[in-house]
Length: 134
Picture 1: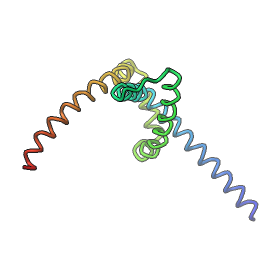
Picture 2 (picture 1 turned 180 degrees about the vertical axis):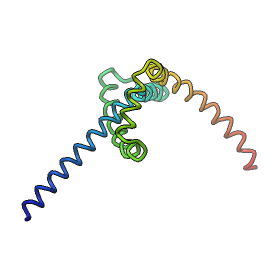
Picture 3 (picture 1 turned 90 degrees about the vertical axis):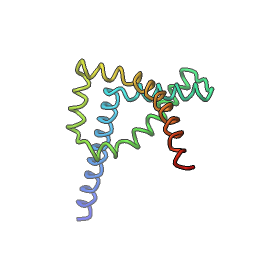
């Protein structure tokens, strides 16, 4: 009886692990199709420039892989709360259409421009809110 329980537990654990890896892979595919990694890389470039950091291509690639891997690990449970595997597959299919490809190719550029506009807006908001402090 113990043997059957251990075998069942082992199979369940392997199946659960495989399912989690499949979902993680779908999240990576979704983020790739959506252009999120390019956006994150543009953000890293912008932050490095602002901090006066110069990375070689090798250093940048290693750094990006490390931080993107940890980001994906943080995001998988969040995505899992909101999207089924079918949802992600459908979204990936969408991003493989002409308009989806256009959205994903423009996302990094829009994110960079949005970051600059958001910083300006944040400064204006801070000034306006300071009136309430006085």
